[in-house]
Amino acid sequence: MNQTQIEQAYALAQERYAALGVDTEKALATLKSVSISLHCWQGDDVGGFENPGGELSGGIAATGNYPGKARNADELRRDLDVVYSLLPGSHRLNLHAIYLESDEKVERNKIEPRHFSAWKDWAKENGHGVDFNPTCFSHPKAADGFTLAHRDPAIRQYWIEHCIASRKIGEYFGKELGTPAVTNIWIPDGIKDSPADRQTPRRLLLESLDLILAEKIDPRYNLDSVEPKLFGIGSESYVVGSMEFYAAYALSRKILLTLDAGHFHPTETISDKISSMLIYLDQLLLHVSRGVRWDSDHVVTFNDDLQAITQEIVRNDALERVHIGLDYFDASINRIAAWTIGARNTQRGLLNALLEPSDMLKQSEASGDFSTRLALQEELKAMPAGAVWDYYCSKENVPVGMDFMKVIKEYEGRELTKRA
Ligand code: RNT
Ligand code: ZN
Image 1 (cartoon, helix red, strand yellow):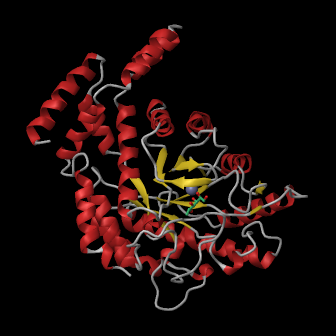
Image 2 (image 1 turned 90 degrees about the vertical axis):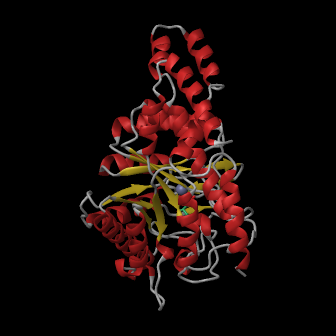
């Protein structure tokens, strides 16, 4: 498509949306203000740089051996630069503690801001906000699947210290970059087969979390979030940090709750949870992901679940209260493509939601005219949102349509295939 075609298609789309009372320019201005937090861990299959060649554990698994994964932080940053260059707008980075840079081995409870100064410099230079995560997995002290809810107080203490250190790194990024980091705690703690005692580990987790949060940090720099899960590989029967546990915890401690799209029953969606949680909590963090059977971390596609999530954020007027992060890892395809496809899909989902004639839909519902509501919902599916998206990409100087794959293939030939 050439520029004239892009603009002509947009002009027609703009008219069609205007006829429904939707201002496409306003939708694009809003879309531009939304930053998505790209998860660093798609670039190297959640390996990190603490211990090159270390095994991923904690009930999450990256499968595939597509060549070209980042072997160090410089490579990962170069890869991320490519991804950001393919996304309209300006976006954040979501960093895990194991992505530290240090010449000597650093115990996880001893990590400090200085181990992340290269990330800070890069983020500052490129205008990325940064979010953070303690890494409570892939470690000998997490080998039996328990961390903050471990029965051994010494092991709990180790992970408590790691989480406090992580919050301070969040604070450091928040101060340095002028935008608060969301530091998200996810732990793998759980049991494979029917537990005899479901409550003791939860009491221990509660105690650990309270000790972690006892260290006061200004929310202008760091915001805390906790991430529930229903089950993982090896924790099929019981996960200590369940939805009920963390929803009540976040509510009682006035912190954030993370909703990961892959963390519930296969037919249970996070979209329906957003409106409820936003009544009680100030802010949420989303891990936009896609569950497939037992795996919670497939690349985000443009499916109904994704659109339901973005619709809920927009319909509840909650773009300022919902932090949008991605969380998946696919090692079977080009990792830069995986990042880009999922991130662009999330943006397209947001755009579609912003292009909804929401007043019209809400009115037909309020007046009891459910046939009109259904008819309109179905008509909207074939509206020319793609033309608006193409126009937005071209206006923001990023590739239109499939052209982003040309950039990725070129980079693959030039850089990724050279990595052993
Ligand atoms: C695991 C959680 C968690 C992780 C990342 C790597 O099930 O979703 O968010 O994916 O911390
Ligand atoms: Zn997650």
